[in-house]
Image (tube, rainbow, N blue to C red; front, top):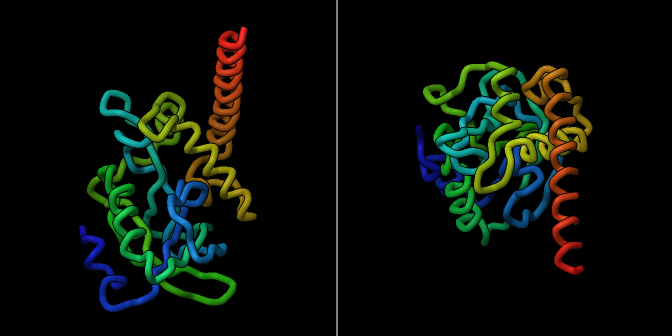
Length: 207
């Protein structure tokens, strides 16, 4: 596994670009100079990174997205102001490397303006979870970590992919459509239940 400092962005390159394909699409955690639709070339989404921090715990681990070799996937390409590069790089390293299974990498991405290079975090082969859609569904619907529920992560990511104009098929989401639909319905029902619970609590406090 290479460190972030070993990527080409720390070799005298004044421009930093970040490819977002999961939660960074809907919660980047920094203000980009620009954001455009992009496609990762030679990489696809896979639910293959175990989460014991952000979306799960050691006792009840979740599962989040990583990039695996082959295919392509839609995402967002962020450009970062030169004066913000060090701060953003440090933030991304702390955020992404909190989970075991990621490695910083510079990949080819395609935009309407042509092909370019961008920093992203791909899944490490030696830590990669086996592809088991049913097991992924179980983890997503049961796990919760410091950043919230695994189901919320999944639904927000599905929404972000749809907003890009990409299809919600298995090549884009990493899951068969029947599994995706189950997660979506269960997550929406759970969110509505939690919202009603909060509203009832607030009403009781005002009574």
